[in-house]
Structures are given as C-alpha cells and as structure tokens.
Image (tube, rainbow, N blue to C red; front, side, top):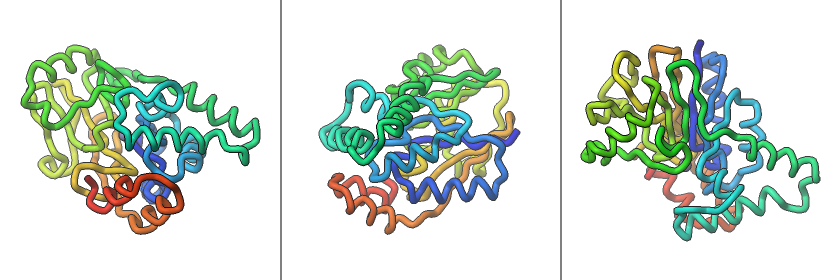
Length: 249
Ligand code: ZN
C-alpha cells in the first residue's frame, strides 16, 4: 500500500493540481483527504469536483461551516464561508449539480478508522474543530487528553496547516528534524499532514504525506503562487487570504 494523505486544500486549485500531478508520478494507490477542501480560496467547485475521485474525504470545519453554522470563525473567515456557500448554490449550476455537491458534502464522515490508524481533520477528541498546535507541547495536560482520546496507535490530522509529528512524550518533530520520514511504532503519535492550499508553517509549498502502513514520508510541492493569487483577484475574497500564500503564513 502506498497511500497519499492530504488535507486543507482550501479551494486553491492551482496548488491541488500541482500536488495531484506529483502524486501521479509517485504512483500512489489511494488518496485520503482529511477535510477543508473548500473555504478561503477562489475555486471551491473545481476542488470539490477533483476530490470526488479520492478514496476518502473527511469533513473539515469549513465543510461543516457551509453545511451548518460557522462556529469559531473570525469575520474574514466567515465572509469567505458566505461567498463559498453562494458559489455552491449559484444559478448557473443545474439542480442535479447542486444536489451532487451538497450530497457529497453531507455524506462526509467526521472520522475514519482503519486497523490501528485514525483519520480526522482536527483532533482525536474533536474530529472537526479542535486544533493541536505546535505550542501545545508546552501544555502536557492537553496533549495527554488528546492521546487518551486516541484509541489507535497512529492518527493523521490536518487543520493547523503545519506538518509534523506529535508524540505522547509531548514532543513535536518537524519534518526537517527527522529527514522527512517517520516510522510509526510502539508509541502513540498524531501526524499532521500539513496543508495543500494554504500552508502556515513558513513554507509556501503544498504539503502532503505518503504512508505505506509503517513509514510516513513528508513531501512538499512547489506551485505557481502568482497564478493562485490572480485567481483570488477574480473574486471578492479578502486580499490577505491571497497574500498569505506567498510566505506560507
Ligand atoms: Zn483548514
């Protein structure tokens, strides 16, 4: 098995296409997406259409926000939620197209378990909304609670847009510290796969991992950020959402 795990595409089709063509080259046999296909970015419909071919699509907090209510969103994120919602309802879509989109979103599960591996968007404790930040390693009580809620030895998550490995011993291993590889073993770990379309770890390249059941490889893909920014400018989305892509912050 050679599985790609991606997350947080955030309607950035330019980044998604770059990652998908890289995955073709990598000859993966399945793609799991941990949520937030939409939200923030300019091409939600196109990104949802591509996601439909993935073997797994989990519910992210941005899908949850368009389906139900935007809870815990700041004003800028909320305005992007409203714009995204409109894009999925516009008149130029046929009734069938709309039904397909909304059924696809509504059918997304919040968590997925396969053997000793858990897949979520946020955290094992709150699959769509809870953030596990790098700074949380200074909060051992929180990390302990997270791992208590994680029945499986390994979990994969997204949501913070920061790739790396959290261990039960309150460590965070940045991919560069571990040669972009981590072997899952005896101890419980939570692996963040980073973000395809809006990295926030200071590296503007799209992030993904490949997992073969034992080894997790961390990868980054350079994409045309200028082109992505041009596509933002064809929409009324806030300029800051586009500009943050330049530095990956
Ligand atoms: Zn996200």
